[in-house]
Length: 253
Image (cartoon, rainbow, N blue to C red; front, side, top):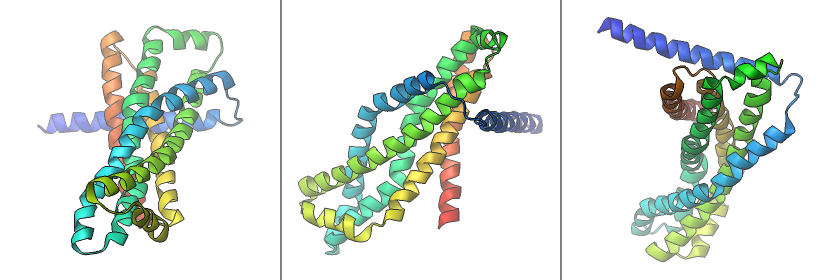
């Protein structure tokens, strides 16, 4: 049992160390910031534009769900003016950034890992090195930047849609006037509540990007290794998001 625990701890330490090294390589490649613009634009479109429909759908019902959870209590207590605040506070600070980051990890992060892993097992990265092209600068850095930028943008869009969803569901299902809900948003939510979620999404985007790229470029074992790398990347991204959310919330409380 102790041998198994030690082996698992060693594997985790090895993966964490590799992710830290990958982070250092990305930061080093940004000095000076020579980025392939075509690769960056391609990744911005693939990772951002194509993720908008699923983010909008998820965010709308997430906002509505928060209203359903808080609505009956505020109506029972006669505090309907706080219905929008309860839903909006939860969405902007926690539910929005976390839920969208997890969706982003499952869709974009997994796809990015599979793409890089396939390039690795087919020796395309070795081909780039043979041509004196740094794979980190050429392939990884544009993906990291695109994921961070697009996750922040998707979080902003998702927050707006979630607030609309909260207002619509509150009016239709709980018979709370839309004006009451939106005045509750405006009167009780502060800019910092919105910014709190935005800088969380910035950090989450970096975590998802680094994890997905790391497992993609370090894959071993052919096609089976590609599947294992995708699974590891999704798990590592989800765990990173939850841990980072805890520490960010704790430090900013």
